[in-house]
Image 1: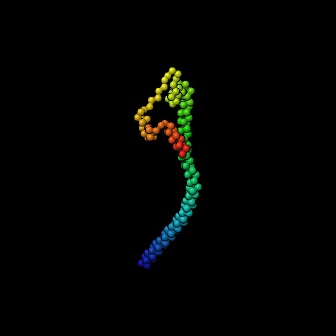
Image 2: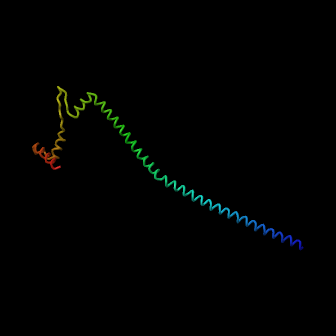
Image 3: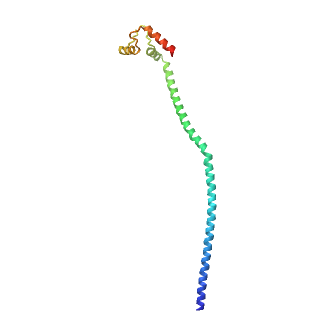
Length: 156
């Protein structure tokens, strides 16, 4: 029996030693993992610092780029409007080269008539009456209206 106890004791001792060795291995691997984590944390912090620095360094140029993009779109719109205006003016210039167009403008705006024609100016009586009542010029002579106009111009 003593041999049996001895074997049992040796097995218990062996198990205890195996447990201690396993615990030591687990402890060593945890310390390595923690050391590795601390290195990764340092690397991550450095990487975050670099990324933040790049963001700060690029923020102002990006803002300028975006604002200039809006200004460029506005300038393109102005340029397109100027081109449309140039096209309208070219059309008007071409029309002004035509004598018939010039005659029509003179008749409409300057009330010109050709030799042998009789020109008439039609006045709407209702509109003329309204204008007189607004001015109060129905009962006054025409020259007093002229002097009133001169006085108003002198005051203004």
